[in-house]
Length: 476
Ligand SMILES: *Cc1c(COP(=O)(O)O)cnc(C)c1O
Image (cartoon, rainbow, N blue to C red; front, side, top):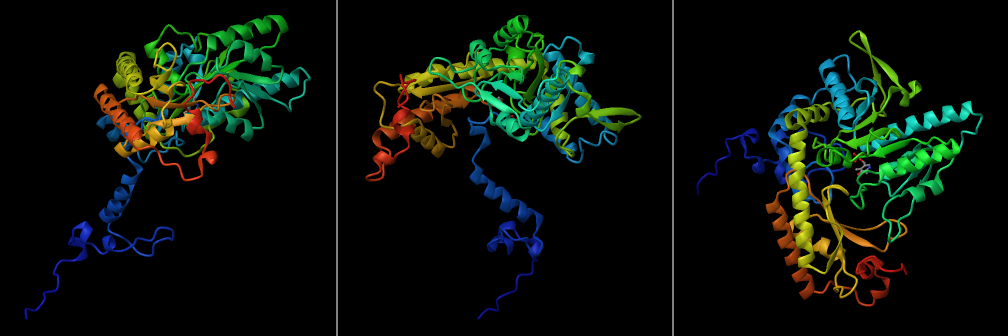
């Protein structure tokens, strides 16, 4: 009998899938006792992350999912830079300052040197800062006029959750205008019904998360101008341009929604949405230094000068800001515009084709004058199929696509839409692959009726039945 040779190679030489660590159940919820080879640890995590699916096929997210190799390199270079250390990393601080000025320019601030702003971790933090500055300004004015300062409010359309957070965290009442079947955003009339002397600002969303559409900033501003002329009430506007702040300026440069409107005091946008930067950067810019109360600014020593900081975070990665600057430099207005031309074309293509594929009624067709490069649709009311948009969304997942199906906000929560956002890195070819899969999914759903547990019909979520309605006449 041959003597079995002991392996001569060590654990260090083994193929990573031949190591002991690859042969055990890894502890997941307790601090591990010993070490593990780095390549093995990396492989374990990398392999688990496959379960996340493919970000490029996520058509629900607004966030960036494709980046040029140059951005990967700059991010790597900046991995050790803390944005708050303005003193130690003056070049990075300078780049942030330039980006703020570039954005003030893009958003048509009347005097670049008078505007002020900062990078944040996203639009949510930027919204908090914009809201806080307005709350401070309102309080100073109310105090000076001898009015009570305990009941501030904001007036908004259908907002992203960050404004609900702002309202709760900073004790401000939110007066959110409910949607109606024939009105899916704020308008001047509804705003005027809700503003009063305790309104710190009206906050239109320029690119509503749920509808993709721009709210009418100019119309709201004109109504507030009239209100001021009649009553003396002077209510500023903050624009939540999380998405639209990086689409309209390139695609519809003549559309005035920004600092060209004197009543617009501040604007926030997400660098990591249509700003095309990696996740983790947002921006807030004020028209004028006087719009940001001194009380809220903390001064940090900066190479003999003094650097204003105004942020909820302290330590923060610098790479995203550097990448944002790279994108401004690399693309310029022309580059952003060309990318958006393709994105809007692709959105229009999907809008045109999707209605041929299924019993769909367009909710938003990706018109660049009305909103961001996305498309959304509902099921037609008559001749609705046995499946819902939730079933379709589920089915598309089997091919890796993530297309969001969701219900609308009050008062039209019975309206169900499916939305697709067209982003950097999504080609016409990918759109066609997606459309093919929608077709295939519908064929499947038509031949395999979605399972309904026996006797559960009456308990099913209303979505299934109600998503058939193209803005049905009345909610049950
Ligand atoms: C995404 C979004 C936000 C939140 O932005 P983050 O960058 O994700 O923090 C706020 N408002 C609107 C309209 C958005 O689309």
